[in-house]
Length: 93
Image (cartoon, rainbow, N blue to C red; front, side, top):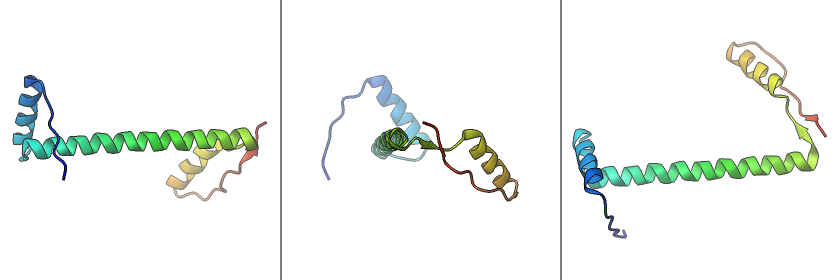
């Protein structure tokens, strides 16, 4: 495992030690957990943006998409246990 040094402002270091102690963790474990969470959040966001760009490219190429009102109605019905036909993609351009 690699070692990394961080220079933290004293005020942040104090906050980290306080929260870590209150949660029963070491400051090291708290910081590693925080870095993991932020890294995962950024990776998920990047994947979301990549999927959105792929969807936009697909729409630009095909013009096919789903009507948002139909999709919302379908999910509302599904939540209520009502059988409703799945929405169908439509040509928009």
